[in-house]
Amino acid sequence: MLTQAPKGTRDMLPQDAYLWQWIEQKEREAAALAGYREVRTPVFEHTELFLRGVGDTTDIVQKEMYTFKDKGDRSITLKPEGTAGAVRSFIENHLFAETLPCKMYYLNAPIFRYENPQSGRLREHHQFGMECFGGKEPTVEAELISTLMGLLKGLGLKSLTVHINSIGCPQCRPRYHEALKAYLGDRIHDMCETCQARFEKNPLRILDCKEEKCKQIVQDAPVILDFLCDECREHFAQLQSLLAARNIPFSVDPHIVRGLDYYTKTVFEIIMQSGREGLALCGGGRYDGLVEQLGGPATPAAGFGIGAERILIELKNQNLLPPMPSTTDVYVANLGADMKIPAFGFTQALRDCGVKADCDVAGRSLKAQFKFADKIGAKYVAIVGGEEYERGVVKLRNMETKEEKEFPLDQAAEQIARTLQ
Ligand code: HAM
Image 1 (cartoon, rainbow, N blue to C red):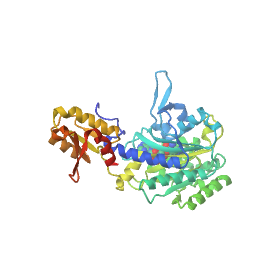
Image 2: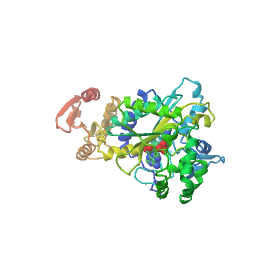
Image 3: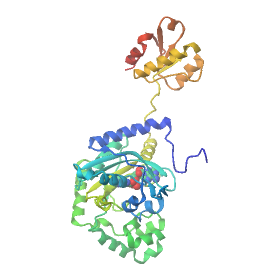
Image 4: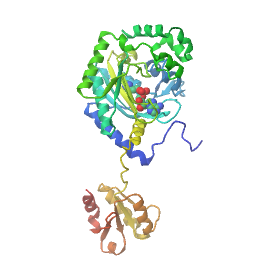
């Protein structure tokens, strides 16, 4: 137990850090191009936020939250998704009173869900998310989807299709609920207990059930697109025109309902091309009622979230991971115990000049130092000691060409830094 991470969690190891940083850099750039700025919200929030925000009939709230009482007897929950925290922050910090739209993104925020761990499904995962507050036009969703597709393309992922749907608004959804309930009729008694409980309270959720017998029953259920009010229908049509104008591959999928209750009008997902069938690479949509529902002024909003772990699976399966960069440009080898201090000093001088440098910390022989330098992929080895040191020079060996060059000790760090540039 002691040396085993909790089920469904993963370490990000030092040798993989460059991949995360590479993805994060691309995410920062993509978000900045569309005017989104970073937000960081706490890892935990009051449980009430998610009960009210995500919805008390969702799987996330009913089955998956990490909830506990703190020492002050408050009910606290580890963030099971990023949007509710962003909305809470938007309201609490009165961002609604500033110039709108307010565009924010979170970078690989840790998200916790008590799920059955399997490939691509973890109990702690990390989400990059973009949220836009104060834009009612479908241009917002088009911007989010465009940015997302640009990001994924920039990472090398191609041939992706975004699946879109509209799940209506509080005006038109009740009519759909009635139609769905009429369709289900007596068959609801053949469905799972969760679906039966959702029948009266939130029938749309039934479409999200993962149980095979329930999935079969809802297969031919009426679709919400046939029940949209004029405003929702027009909004959805405009979004499609905006995406088509940008040549973004999309398909209308009336079965997407998403697993969170706050969505209105647009919902969208991109499905992974590899790994477990049907797993979403990312998901998002519009949530025009959420800010008001959580106590803020009525503010239209939309956003998406994408899991870093799923991006990595997709990149790996498609052989798109970049090679690991070398950690060391110059390895400084010492020629004996009395050269340890000058070698350390020279290593630091190189670092001061912006060169990735390293030296022996294990008391290795010269031969072993060279072997180590080779193993870590150092491009050069600088040799400190011997008759060169007595002559006041440092020898630099190119590990690939084996070419050697001497530098005067007092200027060696600057000159090597310039050579490497
Ligand atoms: P979500 O669809 O629940 O939406 O999650 C978004 C993404 O997070 C998924 O598409 C997937 O990449 C990743 N993800 C979710 N659960 C797991 C898991 N157990 N293991 C690994 N990765 C996972 C939301 O969370 C919404 N807050 C998105 C949003 C933002 N909507 C509007 N704004």
